[in-house]
Length: 376
Image 1: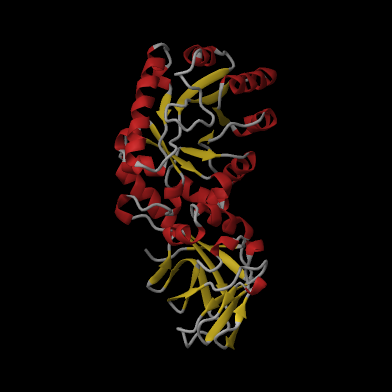
Image 2: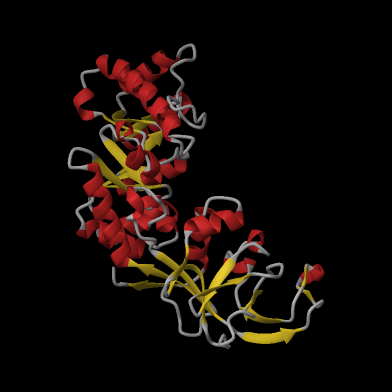
């Protein structure tokens, strides 16, 4: 969705940054490791319509999605390669996903049965990636340490309606030691499984996403699933990745208030100095979460201005007392760069108390988007 000039706020997506990130990560991984570009949640809010053509141009062969809507958008953008779902799906989703050629993520023995029955009903064989709990995430993988675990996997491998093309897992922590330990166990378990099948040359092993792939080389195996790194939300590769999103609004009004005045709903903040407060016309309805109240910052004229009130549905206040030239109509950047300053994912995480993706995925899907091609 293109941002109209009258929008209260919008998201800019830097296509050049995404292309730079793809090339940088590829160079780091080398030619022997497969690259799955993950575009779940409408490309983490960056827009599949913007991101998928870049993947096609860069020759990406595998794309990871979560929903069938995302799969449809990737195909509509001209991608004809492999599509892998990165979570277990329900029967109706699986059935509908056949038309996109989706490779399904199998999240357990019973789930394998659902996929198999769906394939049989349609008279097809579905390509699947079988999830193992080797890393200890405890979410959707078969645990080979449990009684019957090995027999369960053997049964899935033998199902005539399933073509197992991947053995996979997912790391629970962005901690190098934890990743290394999980990768070692995954290596051991998958070697045992592959030793008992004649299809080992057709089954890829994969468990690494961005942090693991770019921090612990032994976690890469045959394929890596790169999501956050595509969009620059990673400080790996020596900080060479570029954030691709900028969230922008404009100051609507500025008023001066004396020291001692209260600010916001429930008199949430009391001014300890005479202040000039600027109204930013976005709020929690636009994904500007209330956790940023009193903790977040925006950029105005290349300087940081703190959020001082409790964020309302459609507006919040920033203190521009130290920016005397600030005026209505000035650009206010909530995320991304303005001049020499930047509100980075790490800044948002400190203010929000959770990962930055918890917010920017929503910003990208709630606010209108503008593709740009910023200079590198």
